Image 1 (spheres, protein in one colour):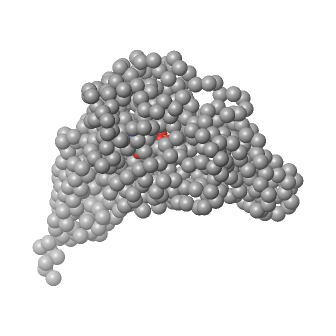
Image 2: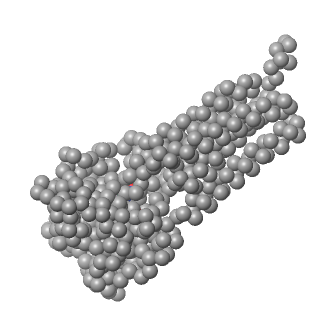
Image 3: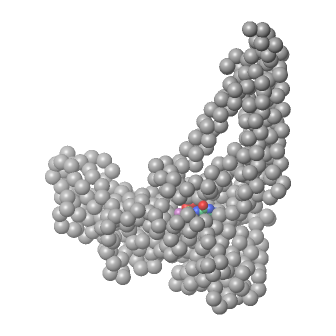
Length: 504
Ligand SMILES: Nc1nc2c(c(=O)[nH]1)N[C@H]1C(S)=C(S)[C@@H](COP(=O)(O)O)O[C@H]1N2
Ligand SMILES: [Mo]
């Protein structure tokens, strides 16, 4: 009976609250220090990035399928909910003694430290951020626990709780402000106009059927699909950027930003497609890219015999492996791109520089924030997605998609419209079939380049009721899209896109 007097006990709400405030203080302190040592060092972000890299491939594929490009928001929300639940539990376990809560905040710091330590893009100094989390978490938990045991509803307890929350908030906000003041937006704004000496053809009026429901031929930068593993978009300023070419070359070369920017620039219209694009999916877009020929840079370094892959690495440690043959074949037109649709690359699309290799899925070719090209063999280096079971050879497959109609239509002549693509080869024919009826051949848009998508439309007669329409494309090699449904793993989806609509 008398033990209650000797060891006072906190109420459950107060104990839980102490756990939560200590967690917030730990994360706030880490975020503050991360503002100075690199945004990716913030323990919450680092743990999230580590989770992305450690996620088994099947779960990642599921996440992309289930959540699309919202997969990162879902991950961060899930982590926040889990962390808060653990903080409450740790607080509740500490109603008498502070030890369980201290163990919890230590675990947060240690986990953050482990995540930062294993990030390929963060140096030793970045460990200061999780250390700050550890110290702040321990200090705040011990302090609030002691204050509350002295009188959990006293005005001193209330004041200290508020001080801790406010301090954590200020630390987090200052960290955010400092971090973003060092971001790449200012550097991007200073780039100025990028003018190509070898320009791409102008886009003719008949290049899209946007008025019938297809996308516009060029995708505005803001609408361009985005796929990458980065939770925080890498901030690379031109003055900090360089591209190193090394490995199986005669001379190692490091290009600075002005080395690249001052070269004669080439412009190409290219459709980029993600291997994770399901049949009928949205992860495909087209832009006018400006940059330099990768073949020229590789020739300046001098390729040695036996070179098989160009292993590219980004500022955030992501890697891709591209066949050397695709990089140097002039008919492919592989680029180091620095501009997109008349602007410097948007930050989230790889500023200051990325790779663009027409005809290959992004995961084997399109490294954003690229800083390193190692010329090597397939055996020597295994890039990010190949370690997770995806194919080494990944040419973009001939495919087509229906974009219209999107809702109910009036019975009679109905206009079906969409896109098709067959890079390097070009689209020869697109056909649609309604309710398994005969194939009707569609009108094609004016071809701009074989490396970009083409739009199509066709009018078909339909009676009242519900209808299924499917599409298939044939490319100029004579290949007609297979109706065999294949999953996106390991080298891209196949099958005929089918939609249903109602005619009234
Ligand atoms: N650094 C980096 N580059 C990357 C990726 C990535 O995760 N990290 N993803 C690749 C993939 S899978 C695709 S499909 C393209 C997408 O380019 P976008 O976001 O500009 O459309 O970028 C590629 N480049
Ligand atoms: Mo991708």
